[in-house]
Image 1 (cartoon, helix red, strand yellow):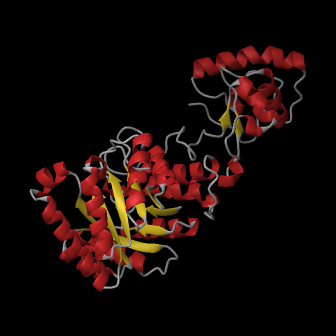
Image 2 (cartoon, one colour):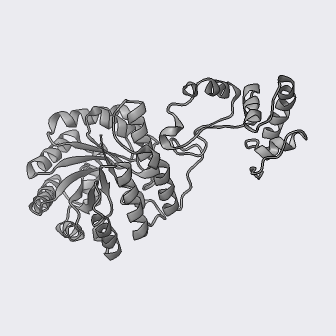
Length: 377
């Protein structure tokens, strides 16, 4: 799997998100350290500030291929060339709807513009990803014609874009299988999340033969966002058993960096990187995790440089309480656990949050208050 991360382009197109050049450079550097193979870092045709950011990333000497996004317009590609990137994504609508209602053009015009743009970019020595925008609504026969024209013109790969997030995994698999069988150049799957299926669609496309998967960190992007980088690479590893050499320990720092730069918090239950995804409260689950974490954890938190939490609350059982008392250095004989457990559950109910170390200390005079405690609130 080759990952093309477009956090700095498609991700930044999320409403209200605006990265500074310094933030873009920092995020690109982290993406490269993680081992992401390709970074789509911006749209130079937007103006001088964007060009400065793209050029700054191109000068970093990253191991990742640095790509800029363009309309199928020669002036756009020229702006990208001036930034010093080695690769360009060139985009044109492939659906009849967008060809008519966005461009006001014909299919013939689209194919001619596609060839003209690719010819120019290849003559300049660039790697070219030809994007089929709104491919999920395109007529399949025309999409094959679009792809073959891109191949004949010398494009290095085709981007299949589910621009409106309208596909579901089985249909994604069907369409990508059909396309992969008929086109010789590599295919990229670019999935949007309007119906919550972007990660599943990205992985279905990969299973169908797409060799490149487009992602954004935390799924950041327009409307409901894109396939989330952290979800795609972890699912590829643990669901499909796909080998790769990403540095997973840097994923939390990368996600935190993007969250801070975008002004968006990470939900506690966000898959892979949410604060509580390795936290356990339910008595049955805690009992299983204490016996063997794999009973209720799909992968060990240590892969991400994290650790698990055993929390107390409404759903806690005897083993969880005994474990927590032991962790605090307090003996917890059975009678004491039985006495405290109803109080713990009631406290969790009234607080509507996990019972902290301070809460636990307050429930019994015999428990010492730890030196550093969580503050209720």
